Length: 296
Image 1 (cartoon, rainbow, N blue to C red):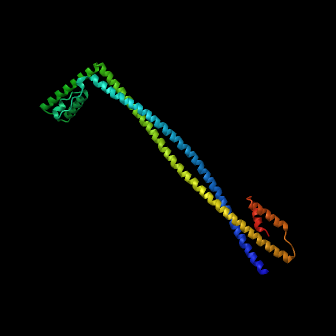
Image 2: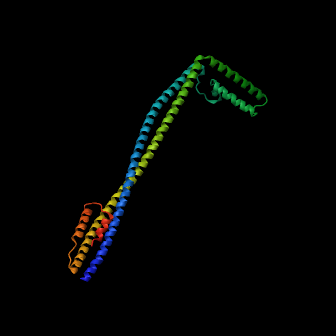
Image 3: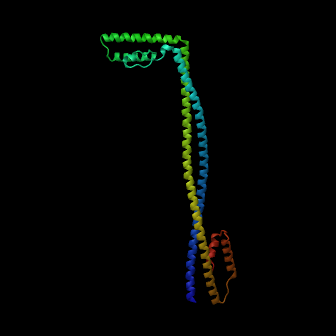
């Protein structure tokens, strides 16, 4: 009998240690579950906020793209006005200002009609060559004469153009058309840049959504694993308690038999009540849990 009591006492200590271990592991898993739940909920909250940002940037991008289309239509109209203004200017200059067909050789270039622009370009070239000392002697006199002729011709052509009302109006119309063209082009570029910025931000937020969503899913996977481990350790804890109580019941019965006494029914009923609460999912206090393991 004494040998059996010794073995039962050893088993009781071993099962008590296992029950304590399973209870500790279960509590740790439950604590981890709470942490993973908080992390998952925080990540999901950030995902929802980021999705709002993605939608906002998408709407801005679409609005900017619509503006780009409108501005391109305005620019196209401005381009048309520039072409028409150039045609009107050429018409106002008269047929003598129209460029002649291109001819081969140096003579072909000389036969082209002079314009204020071409004459000014030639005058600047000659002035630069003169300053560098490339024309000396008789050639110097010749170049000086040519420069005077060019200046006089430019002045004459300018007076002629200034007196031509149609030509002045055409030049002004072309200037205004080109300004409108430049303004429209700038507006298109600004709207396109804003649309691209919104698009880039949308992609950035989308990437962040994926990152945070992956974190939330990882936390959820950890939560499920932690709950699974908690349930497994809880079941092992219940089994350990049952084994522990069975051993304690046998030890108590053996002590009672030796002393000629019966079991204390009140202690047994109290423990059964606590076990019933534990099995039904109720949360027991630390003192109640310890009482389950101290039951003797």
